[in-house]
Length: 294
Ligand code: SF4
Image 1 (spheres, rainbow, N blue to C red):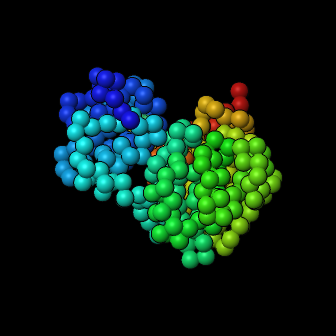
Image 2: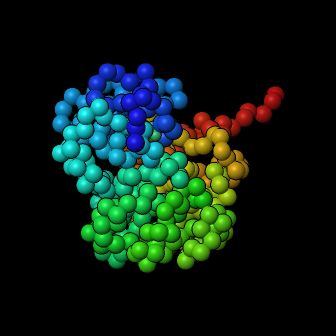
Image 3: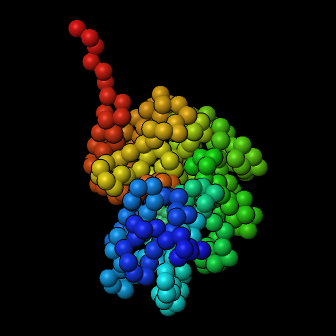
């Protein structure tokens, strides 16, 4: 629960504020970019919501914040309830952003796929009864795909509730030792038609991406959109093996996808050819070919 006594001076005056417990995870800036901005090592309110829609987005950010760092001087209960029941938020074609990011995964995003053959949860949000009911209403959870060791959060709890199969790579399986399905080695595995698990070691030894319908790439902490530079990004710090990271990014060059849905960083939707070119440009920037000395 955000405290007025810890309100950051970087907030503009008004109802919404961020306090000093913020972990700078970026969730609020994605959900309500017209209200929140990065300022130093924290987020801050740079403009108070100007419309009901903006206020709804600000309340969605307040609810999704993994550490409860966003507060209001006076809560509008109607809009707050509306925001609370709005999650998961539909993205496109049965794919949802779940919200309720967990502090256990440093505020990583999780996603949900609704599918007639069984639904998928991609990485884990916080546990809330309300979210359990929302998943139930959407048809439950058949698989929980874990992109890597950092983002498992409450996966075990959701797996028990829905009798779901947790999928993780062997090299990161210490984070979920009793997972029902372990992916081995570097080969891609089609778990169900339209769902391909792609090992992408680099950030961690057992990082994986999930390619769904040859359109949606759930990329964990492997690949994301950088809002400031308007280009794809990949980790520079917290990299287990940079050479493998490069190989893993290169393997995605020939994959058809038009969405990148990351654990951290911004999601992006581009036409196929533009996405391919964005991946190629990322490789050129991050691992430039050194010209040999004359
Ligand atoms: S969602 Fe919360 S923790 Fe994350 S950047 Fe915003 S205020 Fe900070």
